[in-house]
Amino acid sequence: MSGQRIGIVIRRAQPSDVEGLVACSSALFAEDAGTRDPSVDVAWPREFGPERFAAAMDDPARLLLVAECDGQVVGHLTGAVAEGSAMRPAKVATLVSMYVRPARRSGGLGARLVAGFSAWAKEAGAELAEVTAYSSNADALPFYERNGFTSQSVTLRTTV
Image (cartoon, rainbow, N blue to C red; front, top):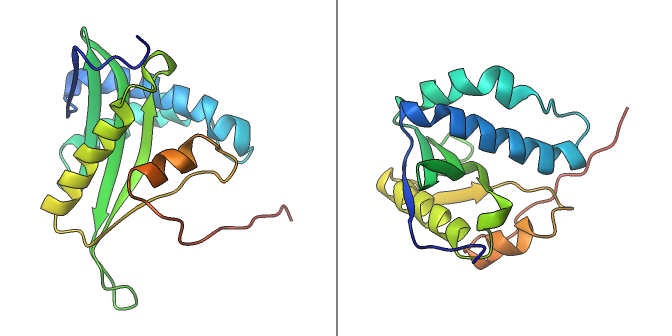
């Protein structure tokens, strides 16, 4: 079964997961930004990911979750929480990136990752949670809406 839940554990990432995090992040960049945004360096995860993921594991303002099956990372979610400012005083948790390998989709794994993020955000004292997705990503937008997010703004872009 493609999104099979049995045997998949959602947990915080550990140093031994860095290679799997980089592989999932590379796949995300290739599949998402790589097909939608030519300004994104799709090599970023391989070049900078190991250091960034390792540093984030020790940062209480960052969350790294992995979905593990049979010792392999089959998905991930990264998040960050930031204190409010004078202009926007609410503490905000941002779902920075999420990826589930295609063979594991449609079985609730993404929803389980988002639920883990939401629990962490609440525990961290966030008042709001947000995520950004490409407007052309016809799968991501309804997924996030099913998981409680609503559209608030649209970013328009042009080349100069």
